[in-house]
Image 1 (cartoon, helix red, strand yellow):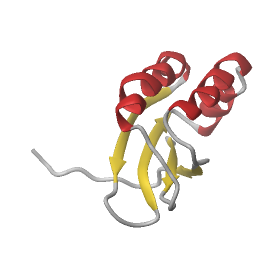
Image 2 (cartoon, rainbow, N blue to C red):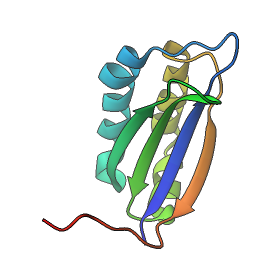
Image 3 (cartoon, helix red, strand yellow):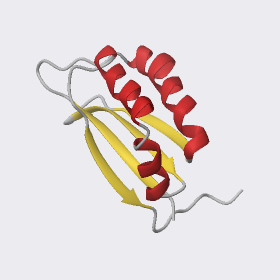
Length: 106
C-alpha cells in the first residue's frame, strides 16, 4: 500500500516560511533525489489560519521505499540542511498508510 508522509510547518508568533523558495528550490531538490527512489507525487497546501502555515504530502510506493531513500545519508543530509533556507521552525511529520481513497467519476 502507498505511504503518505505529511509534513506540517507550525505557525508561531516568530515563525517564517518562504513559500517561493520552498516551491522553486527545495521541492526540486527533494524530487531530484526521491522520484527515482519511490516518491510518486506530492502536493503542498497553505493555511491562512490555524496551527500550521504549510503542509506538504509526499506519497511513496511504500514505507520501505521511504526508509530506503531516507537511509541515503548524502541525500537526506542535503534535504534537511536546506530547510533553514525556507523555515525557522522544525516541522511535524506524520506517517500514514493509504487504506482507502476515492475520486469523482468522469
